[in-house]
Length: 97
Image 1 (spheres, rainbow, N blue to C red):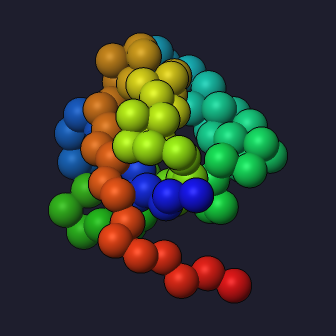
Image 2 (image 1 turned 120 degrees about the vertical axis):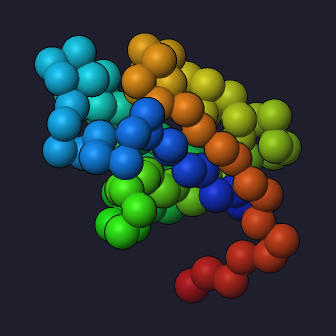
């Protein structure tokens, strides 16, 4: 199994505090989607990062390939709705419990 870092990139630095109703709805679906991936064993954790330059989302996912992992990002409701974009990076190595 390969590990990947998923980064959800919001449309603006203050997004976490300035979301409109459409964005908030997409982010609610985003959270539900990632909870499902957690339950399915596709991610070991996910959540927002308090970056001083602007919050962004982090997930550590597993997949058979980069394309397999990217498919998770492409299915994220926040990405599908055009509320955010994502980046996916292969982990060179991962040390876990």
